[in-house]
Amino acid sequence: MSCILETLYIMTSSELQKKFTEFFEKRGHKVIPSASLVPENDRSVLFTTAGMQQFKRYYLFPDEAPAPRIVTIQRCLRTGDIDEVGDENHLTFFEMLGNFSFGYQARSNADETRTNADGPYFKKEAIKWAFEFLTKELEISANKISCAYFKGEDDIPADNESLGIIKKVTGFSDEKIKGSGKDETFWSLGTEGSPSGPTVEFYVDELEVWNLVFNEYVMRDGKYIESELKGVDTGMGLERLAVVMQGESDVYQTDLFAPIISKIEELSGKKYNIASCHSEFDSESLSDGIPKQVRDDNIRAFRIITDHIRAAIALISDGVIPANKDQGYILRRLIRRAIIKGKQIGIEKNFCAEFSDSDKVKRDLDAEETKFRKNIESGLKIIESQTEFSSKVLFDLYQTYGIPVEVTVEEANRLGRDISNRAIEQSSNLMREHQELSRSASAGKFKGGLADNKVETTRLHTAAHLLLAALRQVLGPQVQQKGSNITEERLRFDFNHPEKLTQEQLSEVEKIVNEKIKANLLVVMEEMSVEEAKKSGATGVFDDRYGEKVKVYSIDNFSREICGGPHVKNTGELGHFKIIKEESSSAGIRRIKAILE
Image 1: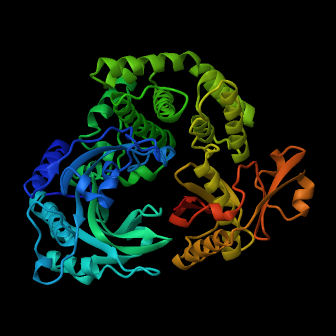
Image 2 (image 1 turned 90 degrees about the vertical axis):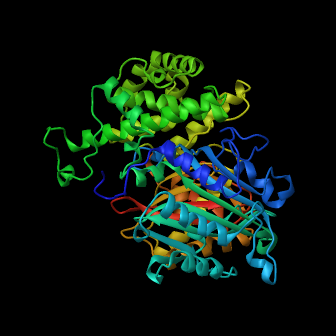
Image 3 (image 1 turned 30 degrees about the horizontal axis):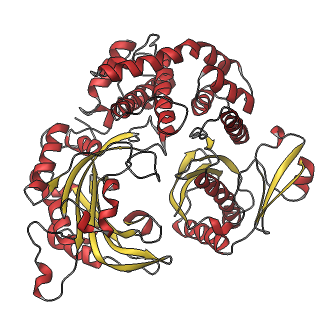
């Protein structure tokens, strides 16, 4: 039992799934099976990333829905933060418990408080049932639960309706109900005609477990207009719920992961023991004499193998095969990263197939591992021998030895060696050129530095230039870029700053960037020497690694940077810039995650 969370009794993950579906089935919901991890008729994403993804159309066209009330346990896969897997919470593959309602229309007079037993519903029922499920079905003490609601922001009013329902249903005092802004308690795709709305979040011991989205707006001409048709979209991660109900603080110690962890222990001869409740864990070594850094690396390796193998099995089961592009590339990357981490903890033979009962999955995993292990030793030796990593080295490690660029970056960092963003970007260009020559359909989905040259990635890359300039304007000219990771889904930007940014500072940065986007400024590229670039006022992080000529990208008089590209032609192509998170990256380094809507 964790020293952080306590429960009345232990409940297995399968019991949680059964209780959830039965609870909502009794309340008129149709049980719909999980959709494939590879979306059907939806090219906007590589994978199914949320429970509502297969139902998006029903919010606008509820008559097409198989029922006005639906309950699912949806298998999801997200790769945006794949390089952060290894801590207590990040996962690529997870299951989302969700209940949904489509086509609700608010009624005036006395009928407004009545909902057909099998028809659509809205805030009152969703909030009531969520609290009832947590406190009655799962027997979680109400003292452990708290809520958040949308307090209003910009031109969107506060969700006082939900606030009133929360107070009535839960009896909570104001101290247990937090009002939050758009970043935390408002959901929107940010695209024309898309459903949007405020959210209500439920927390257990300050761990967010359930998010209720109330789609009551539709975006028209960049504004949120009240929609005649309203809908409910909720999501509760099974893995997080298992943490609560099994009294753990680490998802990898729940029954969802325990069999995989146990098998890795057997294969490696090492133990997974986070010792999270022991103060001596922060010392240089524990009583067994293992240095803290070695123990930390081993724990991270266990978690990465567990998550990646679980995700790989799910992908292969849904028909994905290892390849050099799209879903197949992500699968290949997951498998190969797991193999390298297995080697790190002493697993020298093929092991990935050990975790599946399916002959088909076993064959695919074993074939990919056999192929990779032929070159892994040579590739890792090259990584260990390098003191400086050029784009060619990164490209050769992937092309010749099959080691993804992201894995090379991670292994180099583990050895205390930095790889410049420019080298990562240029290796991506080399990969693209190679694939074009070999008539490949598209570039690989790199996640280190700049992901690829897709439209979405290019837009976010340009937005990163605006972000740096805005940070320098708000915080001072001493601010420099210290790293970035840009995918087609989001940008992650590291910079030097000694303390957490205030909400006012973040809002000002966001405002400045969006003003420059709205101004529709031209993005101009010039080639010049490094010396000329410096004299012209251009900023750059890795000056000593540039060649004789560099590209300088200017955005009006606001931003001027040395960069390898690619960029949009003008800022008006970017859309709306939104900061979704600001956190510490390391001592003196802050990290911002942002998206374009």
